[in-house]
Amino acid sequence: MRAAIQRVNHAQVTIDGKIHSRIDRGLCIFFGVEKNADDTDLAWLINKIVNLRIFNDDKGKMNLSVSDIDGEILLVSQFTLYASTKKGNRPSFIQAERPDHAEKIYFKCLTMLDHKMAKPTQSGVFGGDMKILLENDGPVTIIIDTELKW
Image 1 (cartoon, rainbow, N blue to C red):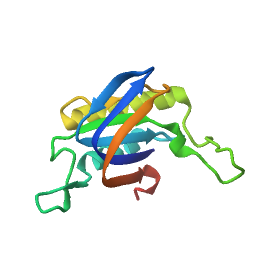
Image 2 (image 1 turned 45 degrees about the horizontal axis):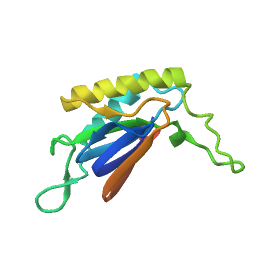
Image 3 (image 1 turned 90 degrees about the horizontal axis):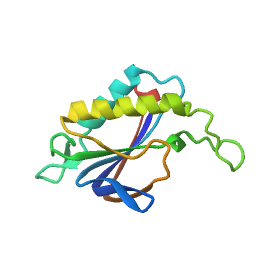
Image 4 (image 1 turned 90 degrees about the vertical axis):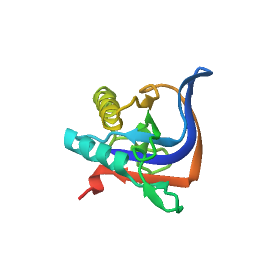
């Protein structure tokens, strides 16, 4: 699994010209599922996201997590995180999980984030045509790949 995590002042998902979901200060996470990902990978990723210290403390150091600041999370499915551009100019998505299985993992991720954060996680629509508007704070963008956890 891969997550592109952006520290944001605010973010929103718009579908068909209407705001579907929005957050204020927190994390906008683009989430992709690779073939053969499992629950162990998901649990590790959720724990890493919730405890990632990328918010500034009162001394200006990145020392606080999204939990510490009582921030919000917006989770957006994005299979294109598994684009391979090794050959040619058209990306291949052969490493991305099948949509039916990836959707189950996406919803499990939402549920686990809700539980860990003790509040609802905002989301996009799996497989939907979404417009994402965000204000990256910093900018701070962190990529986490469960294949690199060991």
